[in-house]
Length: 191
Image (tube, rainbow, N blue to C red; front, side, top):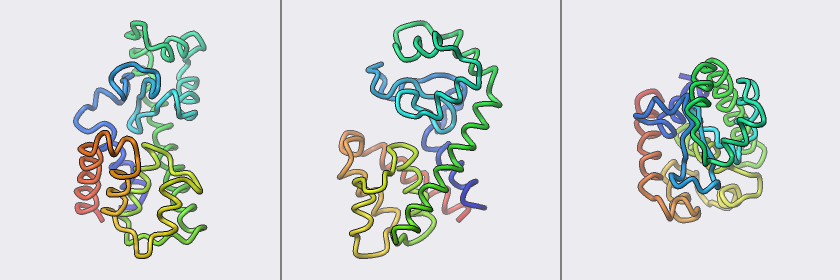
C-alpha cells in the first residue's frame, strides 16, 4: 500500500472514526462552539476557521459568503447547509484527497530537506497526522524537536512529544493515544 493510501486511511480513522456521518456534515471540534476551531467537515475534518483549503472546498461546493458567515458565527440552524454539503460529497472527496496529497508531500519534503531521521513509515504517518491536526511548521516546536533528537525518531516518540509539548496533548492525552493506536493498527495491517 502506498503512503498516500495509508495516510488517507489513518486520517479518516483519526478524524472520523466510527462516525461516518461526519464526512458530509458540519461538526464542532471543540464541542462548545467557541469559534476557535469552527465547524469541520470531510474525512480530513477541514477546520473552516484555520484551514483555507476547507473554505476553497466550500466555495467549490457553491457556498456563498452569507453561508460562510452563518458557519463562522456558529449560532444558527445549519440543516440546510448540511444538506448542501452532502449533495456536493464528490467535491468534498476531491478536496480530502488533495489535503492528503499535500500533507504527504509537505511533510516528506520538510523531513528530507532538513535531515530529520525517522525510524520508519509508521513514524512518518504520525508526523503527517500531527500536521493534519495541528500543522507541522518549519522551525516550529515539533520540527525543532525532531532536528535535535539524537536517535531515529519512532512513532512513540512523536506520540510522547504531542502529549507533553502540545496544549491538545496535555488536555486530551486519551485522544493522542487513540490516534497513535489507530496508526499502529493500520500500519500493522498494511505496513
